[in-house]
Image (cartoon, rainbow, N blue to C red; front, side):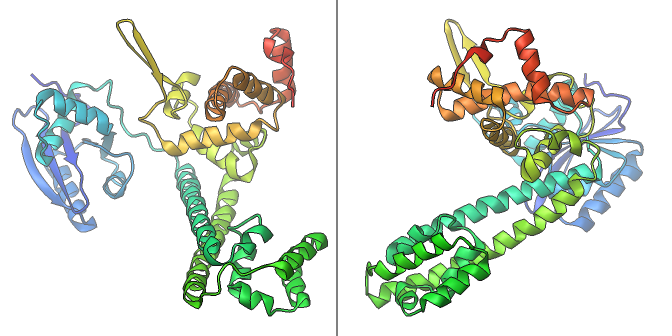
Length: 418
């Protein structure tokens, strides 16, 4: 017989979709279950939630395969609802255990989500919301990261287009996703137009754009003077220069959007009590420090051990053993953004932290790839950060090196050979 916790008056499982959501409801002390379909709109969701509260009263428990998204955001605003996010892989395996044929149906998935929440309360934890500023900062840094990926993607497309008709620009500029580079393309979208420009006009452009390295400006002008047309086919030139201008517009818009995010992130980050701690980390800077802050959060009771952080961030490897076979692979079910945050920051510390550089060299000499070495370094960094974060102590490279010397760590005996 199903046992309910006295904390909730009803349990609801939801199988979400874009336009509608299937649900399964079972009230406390009830043996029957009710199925239905909810249209996805703010008004319909509010009517449904209010009717449930009037019917059951008290606190309602809702299980769903999401930690964020429109339906989750819509349910978060009700203080009488507790959301239990379920790992999609867990639900898929649970479904497969009862339906070996792998048949799938939305109402069935809603009921399975309800079963998991009721029968395995120790495995399905409620969604714990952090404060509004921390959650806002988390969304901002994630969205900024996506914009950076967009800028890189547009930059790669622009490089491909320029190779078709104007490859000299790639020799003149090292940063192909900068606003100056895009403005240059707007001004002179083809070599034919650039050849007609006076040298003084080109110099004034670079000086006005902030490129005040005179030797570099002269080198670029020399490249222009000696440049040869890769093609004089107007069909190719005219079409590709229009595409280059269009992609440049997208890059400029993205760069300016990243700048707006940087301003908002910096302001919100420095309002947090832990800002000083994360700023004290090597190579954290204005980009990585906010990302590390939201990775740990503000609640010191959120994690009890460093290994919990390592698993949560997807840095801790997974070992699979069966009989005499053993296989180690990286963690698949985790937040890609959090894993990126720790790994990208750890890669930066190789050049700014003495012991991190030694550790990275040690891993490389063992035959590990760059990515494997950086992941191992991130695993080690999390242990250090967790202890500092728990004790509210700023990281000190000097103190950590002293600790390594006191323990006679063999790491300090390693010599880096360039």
